[in-house]
Length: 309
Image 1 (spheres, rainbow, N blue to C red):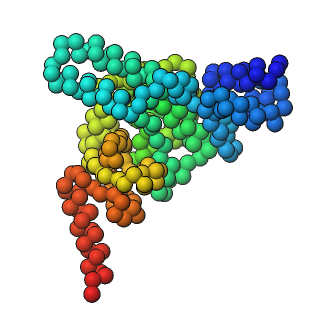
Image 2: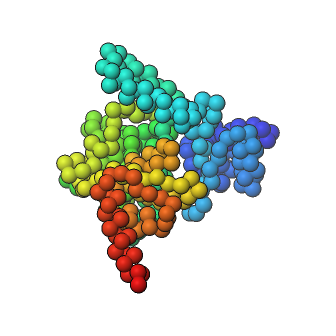
Image 3: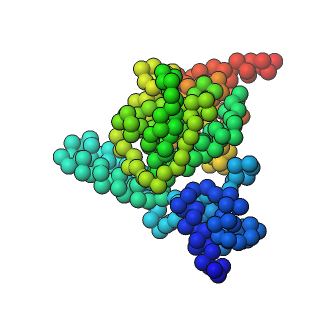
């Protein structure tokens, strides 16, 4: 088999099976493992994004979000569609249901349909086993590409584990643990599942895709009377463009969105929030809500008094 054929076959394998390591690919392609890295370079040159993961559970994975970049919507185009949906809802458009379905199809058929979901691996006091990290990676990949996962999970009130399909919607860090909020095909409802090897025994990426519900809002599932209990506040922060890459690397809260240098997210742990905010000095600014801005101002004033002679 010539080099071009091997590259194409490697592309098909990664698309069909998800993450594969060098030895697995070499065995399937009947070639030397040293050639796999060269095939990867050729595929990247051709425009395919082949991600490489290091470590014991490392390997290669095809980033399907960029398979057809010509179909990608710009952030402004995506925002225009979302605003059009809200405008027509406010106008009481009689064919709102059909419009929502049409917009969903457009968004779900493009690589930029939704902002990339983040895995927050920098949370203090939280360590994960290799198996948990692998399940987290699989969950994030399924979430980004809108694929179902086959989950094997045992709830607190069960004496055995169930295996079922789930559509992952959000990955949440809460009280030194990670959870996935998703739609259970078994329960026909949204459920919270803790990413822990004591409860989550397997998480397998599926070829089956799902259409994200346009009426889903995370605020419905966090708070005192929701699946995730707690006091959550949506905070808006203006961030200078030069520090935005560093800002995005940190975990600030759930449901992060950004537009015109303003980031918004749901905050539960304000001790961590204020501490991280302080590290950016005057390059970030809380713009809403007022009580959060005022609480941060009060803390800064207390610090300043210590240094005023």
